Amino acid sequence: MARSPVAARKAPARQTRLLIATRKGLWSLASDVSRNGWKLSGPQFLGHVVHHAIADPRAPRVHLAAARTGHLGPTIFRSSDSGRTWKEAQHPPAFAHGSGRVVDHTFWLTPGHADEPGVFYAGTSPQGLFRSNDAGATWEGIDGFNAHPQRKAWCGGDQEGTPDGPKLHSILVDRRDPKHLYIGMSGGGVFESIDGGADWRPLNRGVRADFLPEPTPEYGHDPHCVRFAGGNPDRLYQQNHCGIYRLDRPGETWQEIGTSMPKSVGSIGLPLVVHPQDPDSLWVLPMDGTTVWPRTAPGGRPAVYRSRDGGKSWKRQDQGLPRSQAWWTVKRQAMTSDFRDPTGIYFGTTSGEVWGSRDEGRSFRCFARHLPEIYALECATT
Image (tube, rainbow, N blue to C red):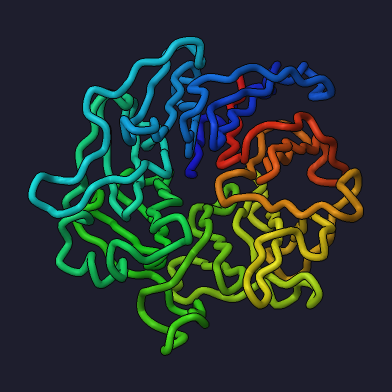
């Protein structure tokens, strides 16, 4: 998710708060000033699937949560008091009547540009792109994507994608230009717009698609998570179904940077997190992508891997993490960082644990256990 440049210049925060979206509701974790003590609060929306929850960096008391509310279907909730109370969107994301498409759930939320208060973007399953101009109260489809003549070809059909449905995710807004947007699609690939979403083009050169008959297609890829490099919107990092990649604009070709990962671990994973200021520093959390793709920590020994040189080399960070028999993994939205110094790194697991490091991954502690399966983890610094 793109972050506001204003947020990076704020004075050190007094508290770090994590929004924990799960398969059964929404929780939050709040730290003390030193990030030593943490207090768990919740649940809210108990029993609902919460796919994503975010705080607005332009107005920190404004929170949005994307939920699938049982038999009532998908919707978005908005809070203007830091999550104490919530109000459902009057018009949540929905495809145009007659399109033959129905939103199963909203999967991704992104605040708009710093100069566009109240603007948010949403990505859905099946792949759809939506925009709100009123802080999440009402949503309209972006026809430049949803009605694009190539959309069906790009997406590969509305039933393809990840095991729990196709996703439009990783909506990135260039901090220099609100009309410059990127999206990721599983499946489909990475796409770019320079006119606020009126038109799009694929941006996948150099990325492998080993699962397709033609392994280097123009589109049809499966990016798991795409991020701007910290402090440099001309660099993008991507954790893909087929490795880890970096793109330096105005270049058009992604460079594979996961080949230097240990062979016994591999470069397959779901989340990717960047340092908020250092464009050469990023973290990934690999999973077992061998044979039948068990989607567990490789060998039952989870670890975070950090690169300080733009992906040329990687260092294993596992101090404090389980040494054996830990078979969880971390979903693409369930790993995040804060703006503190040193940077905090946090992730939530498929077994309902929240782990964190206040020293950029040198050591980790478990902050919460026994939650439902964690779908997303986002930082709300107040």
